[in-house]
Amino acid sequence: MEEKQHIGQLFDRIASTYDGLNHGLSMNIDRFWRRKTVKEMQPAAHVLDVAIGTADLTIEMLRRGKAEKVTGLDLSDRMMAIGEEKCAKHKMNVTFVHGNAQEMPFENAFFDGVTCAFGCRNFSDLDAGLREMYRVLKPGGQVTILEFSYPTNRFVRNLYDLYFTRILPGVGRIVSRDKTAYTYLNRSVKSFCWGETFVQHLHDAGFGNEHFIPLSLGIATIYTAIK
Ligand SMILES: C[S@@+](CC[C@H](N)C(=O)[O-])C[C@H]1O[C@@H](n2cnc3c(N)ncnc32)[C@H](O)[C@@H]1O
Image (cartoon, rainbow, N blue to C red; front, side, top):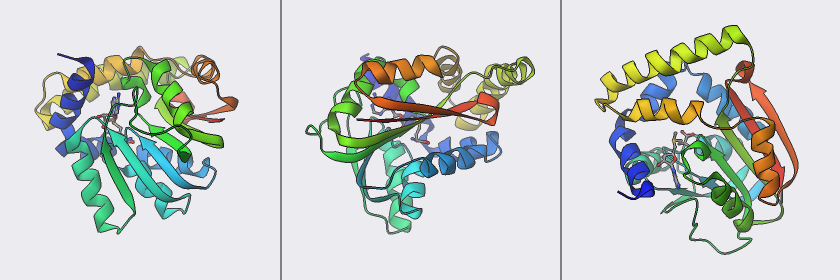
């Protein structure tokens, strides 16, 4: 099966339990991370939220007035259907587009800002995804990325490993009734790059003025950069 089809189907399978598991298992820390990410965004008229999923980041940026209008891109129709329902409830101006972050169906320099929360580590080719973000962004626009990272403190690392290797796959399997999805999520977190290494990928994609802010002792990190 093609990689992108596989990822889309994986998230389709867990879509109905995704929000509840996210907020429950993180004890709502994920909400705080998204709020902080939105604070780091420069205001932009039209934002592309890559891997929009169930639209939590989009809702936060529209609520805080950081974007006037958002287009969301994702491979999972079920994740987007839930996002669409949530945005409709809030009467928010959001367009949902099915597509691959590594081959975006948008013109060059189309968006004033680009965001991506917990999407990048799922790309089969991170550099292709970042190059696409750069391509569709207007010059001077900002990319803002939120992603899991690996804590440097040994004690926090042990807790993190316990959480991602035992608690998340176990609870995820029971609640989502999917045998493999949360094991995959665990593997994708541990094998992904973070910090200076991720910044180097942003730089290689063409971005400048890169910054990163570790959150919650390095469990997650916000990256910003300018085209
Ligand atoms: C962990 S969820 C994050 C969703 C949302 N941004 C959030 O903060 O909750 C990852 C999302 O990325 C999407 N995704 C993964 N790879 C993708 C790709 N190559 N192109 C577009 N979407 C992708 C998945 O379908 C899923 O909805």
